[in-house]
Length: 369
Image 1 (cartoon, helix red, strand yellow):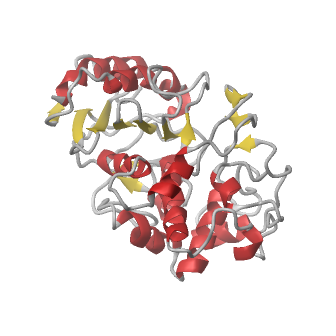
Image 2: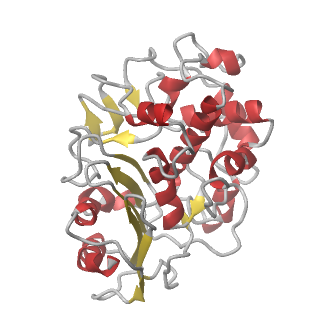
């Protein structure tokens, strides 16, 4: 039973000073199982159907949309950006889709805030225009600079090829075929989990992750709302489940490091002399420190999100999991405490049969910590 993993989940909650979490996990082709513990920052009880703002786990979905278009010949990974977005300031000859998906295209971390101030009235079309107007900042293929700008350009490209707004294209290409209940740019039918420790000086109606305004932006790098099982489905798609969703050849490319020998990361302490990255997924390699489990294979892959979540797959054990927390990653819990929980989920002696209903955490609940 997935309840086997509850002690380690409780330890993670206590160490993170967090009110609750939901885990979704699967072995091989098996049916995903869930474990829901505790409450969100508003005191709402979590369950398997609780929706979460997945932050950068959204990038896995955006990358899958590009791979699906490549499979049908609508684009090629080594196409230059100029072949599809000639009006993009970043459209240098060596800026390719392969490099964009692996964060090695020389692009800046984010769009310039002075071009698109974070305030009421901001929307995805304005952000898309800002992405097009922003040039590369270093030579392509020299550095892994994790960021959002490239995935914004990928979304604009998807819009032009599909003829649909990005949110609709993502539903058509990824969420629908994977049977994911997902929302991008629209308010979901039930409130997502309220997250604790959202930092910054924004008023509540503009709060990142927690506000309807933030969700309305349809960010292709950070705006997807779905369940723990939905995020698990994204990382499992890179592992070839379901078969045929993306061709085996493209999946092998997606899971292979595209950045061998390149330094980089997102910034200290997540900055490495060799920073492997695939076509969407972060690859463990020998990165330290990192949020992947210490017992995971070097070729294990997935993604983490600043809202306090991670989705990971380990080919050696053929296990996948998603951990959705109710506290943002701002205090470092995702890096310090989630790896031990992930390590427990990868132990092959454990079982992933059955699902667990919510029970209160076995400690004083720090939902407001």
